[in-house]
Image (cartoon, rainbow, N blue to C red; front, side):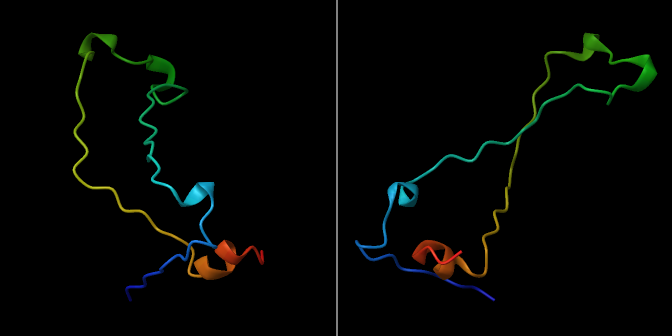
Length: 67
């Protein structure tokens, strides 16, 4: 089901501007386990082809401020 929303000038806030999406691609922590990580593989490249973004079904209530 596709939904769309049109904002009127009164409804727009600073958050209604274009934003950037950050993808956390950090490598580390305990991911390498007791063997650690093989640092000889760096540098490497990862290409992201597609990112899907979801939003609340109650977006109208959120914009109106009735949380």
